[in-house]
Length: 253
Ligand code: UDP
Ligand code: MN
Image 1 (tube, rainbow, N blue to C red):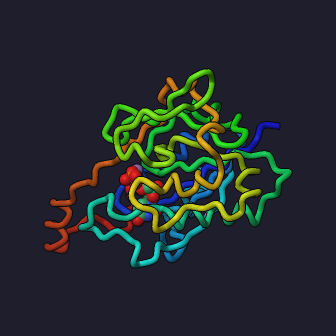
Image 2 (cartoon, rainbow, N blue to C red):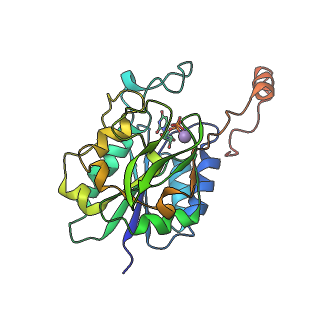
């Protein structure tokens, strides 16, 4: 049987949330043997996400945990100030450890709700034995970042931003075998990790550089893009609201 791909997605309420989740869910619908673990950064499971999941026909697990206040980014903070989605990803790891066994064949991938994923990426992810890596487009101030491969082995990384990070790999650029995460029960993301070091905080306890499995034609193909969605302007909405003429709140966007 095909190993199950567990896709872990942290998500939080904002104007574009439904649009992001519709896009991602409709990508995932094309992937066989997939289990979507959606973790809301919220004190409750919201109706919007619950209904979207129920209507998706995907195999899913719906969890929630609110990022502690002192770690939450404020509207005015620059987006890089605090790591995002950390407690949510860790909760998904905990769920896997409590609900899956070493005999279950699977691969875990952390898919943020706003990136763009080629279906071909999931074919690459599926064959992960321990930790696999590949290029990510539009990230780190470059057209792409990627692992550098020689003789089928990862020898270093093409990256410009903080090149001394132990694993200069974006969240979208690696997958981990379920068995490895179940065998290393302490492995998790560090909520206090310095900017750019979140991925390293997990990967350091799972693999060494030499052990990484290069995918996507020896890391020469970009199959995932770190796209970011512009915050929609609500100028007219706000003006109308002041006159009591804001849009119908019963219509979900
Ligand atoms: N996220 C979250 N809570 C937050 C901010 C972000 O759960 O307060 C989620 C978000 O939905 C996404 C992931 O964490 O799936 C990464 O966030 P974002 O895309 O904003 O990060 P960036 O693209 O800047 O790395
Ligand atoms: Mn993002």
